[in-house]
Image (tube, rainbow, N blue to C red; front, top):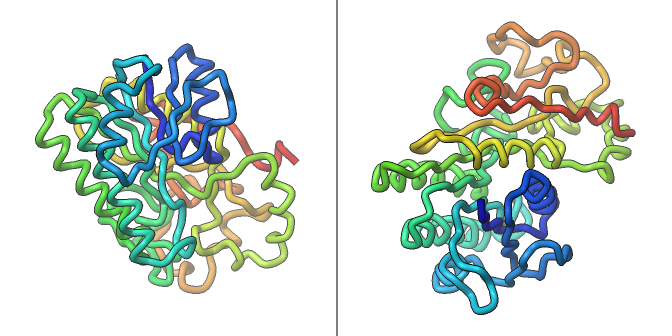
Amino acid sequence: MHIAVTGAAGKLGRAVVEDLRRAGHVVFALDRIRFPDTAAESTVIDMTDYGQVVEAFTGVDARPRGIDAVVHLAAIPGPGLAANAALFTNNITSTYNVFSAARLAGITTIVWASSETVLGIPFETAPPYLPVDEEYAARPESSYSLGKALEETMAEHFARWTPDLSIIGLRFSNVMDDSDYPGFETWQDDPDTRSWNLWGYIDARDGARAVRLAVESDRKGADTFIIAAADTVMRRPTSELITGRLASVERWSGLEGRASLLSTGKARRVLGYVPQVSWLDRI
């Protein structure tokens, strides 16, 4: 397929472009900065400008036309990285522009980055059960996660308007790569440092594989999936982490060893996503 990837120059974006190209897809890299790898066609655009997004999807001079799918990763990637209103406006406007421009261009496959934050991060109010999954309603606790929750609702309506649309939101955990893993040692003596997201993470390579599986899926309609590693960021068993306000939360089976508290069961069943990378194997 010919696939446009927004936010291609980011940590996850670079891994996604590499994975898609390795699988034989033709990738068009879209970002506010030029994509550093000359093997992928690169166009600099502002995702908050609807006209630029439409043009990127329908044809820019010297760039091939005919986009089959869009992977939308472009965003300010977390709370606190910009003023609340500016962050919210940037992210939700960019996502609307992508969804709407894709519809205008007749593109019926969209995979986009939602976030683990919609699950209730930083979990000052305990989740209803552990591990968390996609079955309970979104609990945004920041301007960033509020935007992601509204984008999930927006995706549902775009799917209602366009019955043949596949629009899959991937609720990525904290994206990491090999340069990050040495820093994990600094958390081992103080688990509370990472309790804010239930000690979750996702290796960028596993995140990229999840994107590819979603793009290649024949699933129609809007859906969301948690994408996380199989383990936590801690060396100690998961059972030892469930203390304080989490101690009284109902627990499901499957929490042996260092198992993640972010369930990827739905992604395994529906998309065939199986996380392959553990940080312990990369240090």
